[in-house]
Length: 258
Figure 1 (cartoon, one colour):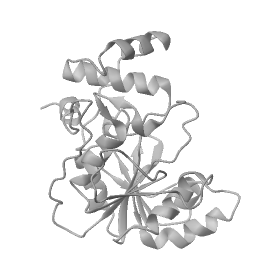
Figure 2 (spheres, one colour; figure 1 turned 180 degrees about the vertical axis):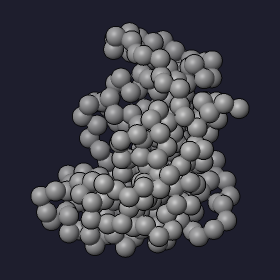
Figure 3 (cartoon, one colour; figure 1 turned 90 degrees about the vertical axis):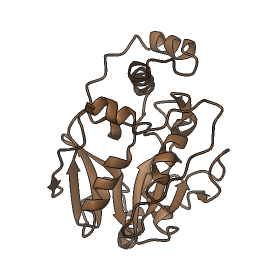
Figure 4 (spheres, one colour; figure 1 turned 30 degrees about the vertical axis):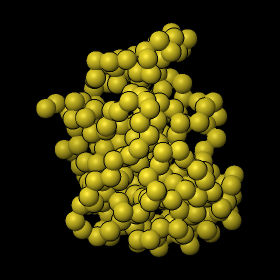
């Protein structure tokens, strides 16, 4: 199976009226929590990222489906309710509103039940268990283990140890309240997945949304959300380039943060 098909099959494509997330048995090994940051304002996109359907499934439902196979403790920060969510997923309002992802991380780390947490955004429709398992395998000693795509570090596709929370709190009181500021001051391992890795793709703009829907149609041979609305949206955006072929998850390296 080539890498693009493997990534496409890493998420579950269900009907639009299905909001339930299937829970699979968590893998053996140290227990791990998951934090999903879902409180962003989405200024560029202009819409609620979590609720956008891709392949007939809301993006947050896709993310929760993948995390359910890895974690027995899932916290969604930034909203208090979500229709159709599993009853064991906890939804929390951000305790530091307006402080960006760093504030959401602080809230999440204060609520988790285990020492480590997978931390992801709510806008990653093609997230895979393979990528997350590799991050966990590399994260035993580092304060933070982050994904890297080429030269780009992805602090919202990472594993954080709960011991970084005091440092997060210090940064929230400073002028540089960014996740990159945190990564510059803690022990970090980078897992390089290469440029074009669709499992690390996030929706931040209308163009990104159009690319994601095009990816689904091309890989699954079907229409996304009825086809017409998505096609009209692509035409309004002026069309999109054919997505780069995603790389597989076989090439990994652990690098210090520069």
